[in-house]
Image 1 (cartoon, one colour):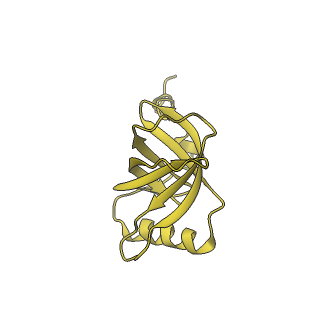
Image 2: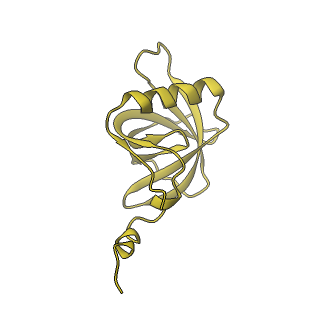
Length: 123
């Protein structure tokens, strides 16, 4: 009794996504905790709730990050706080925390105006 449901097991978390995400390759800068050292990273995809990044920065689950986002049309970078929720071969998953309403609106605007949305599975 094999069904297509078995193939979903190769994408853990896909069914849990609450937000549309966008495959958006964009450079960002990261700071870990209160450290002054800045690391370069690249966004793989982003949603209103978090993002997947690629970076050489050594990160562990639950690390607190400050992320500098340079959004198109904004003169200054947007600073977002996030927590590392996973770090594996696919990249580093970051969940946004303490996001202001204005920052949330800007991220949602970016997602809405990008045609390559990856919609969540609601099965």
